[in-house]
Image (cartoon, rainbow, N blue to C red):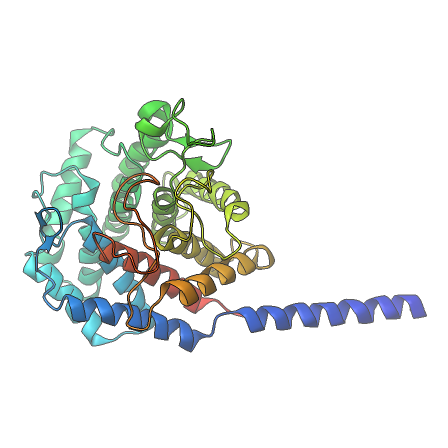
Length: 379
């Protein structure tokens, strides 16, 4: 039996639900605006680098199939998945062809930074199954498996560079050997390298053994570098969206992904960004785009997959995306507040609106990955 009090309660609850829904709808980034930002920032880069095979010259000359450019192409393929512009596909194919679908340092390399290009090579093979596209990357990863050596990933960035390659090959060939070996290498990084690079208490990773305690930040906290942890988040996303649920490591990756995502929420700045030092906001503190973009990528993907609670994480995602769209994206498509290469907060400084990092490619790749998932968010 309904009473006046109960009816009033039900009416109030319905109104609250409607208001909450409307607020979410209002705050959710407009798809057209998201795509506009992605197209603008990508056009800036493609116009600046029309030759996808051109060497990158900073303090020295490097081939353009290194990890920095590989991350950009991960983002470009993400953009292509929601906006299949043939120019994007052609640009990625040109990159592979200019390098003869090869790896820096050849198939003998064990360096994840050299193997990162394989993620896009495999994606392009899945679109057009030309065997030369995956010949070298498969050979390189097969040599890793055959070696029995599992201690190559001594820095956490390597998880994003190499784990998705194993996962993509496992899916392509329906061969769990790749998942099994990837899991062994991952467990070495997590539990053995430097005494273990993951701190379950804080839900975050030390970049490499040089930052495991007793190393401390100026405020006495552990050093957790934002982009480094962002690489791990991206690795989990790209592996979990590829591998079957019964593959070795799946539950471990998902569990640690949730621990990390939960740990990141209270560390977000009021302006939506994250600092380069996650536990010391005053150590080269300020807005930073690449780490922020990778966290947005991970959180938005989780919401889109239904494994993260919308009510909890949408506000975090929206605040971060709006911060980047407003503060990082410039009128010509250049991305500001982007930390240059390195491995800790003091590297790649200064990080300002106008500062140009030593490499402009990987940060854009991170932003494109984030925007691709934000674009998919539903009211």
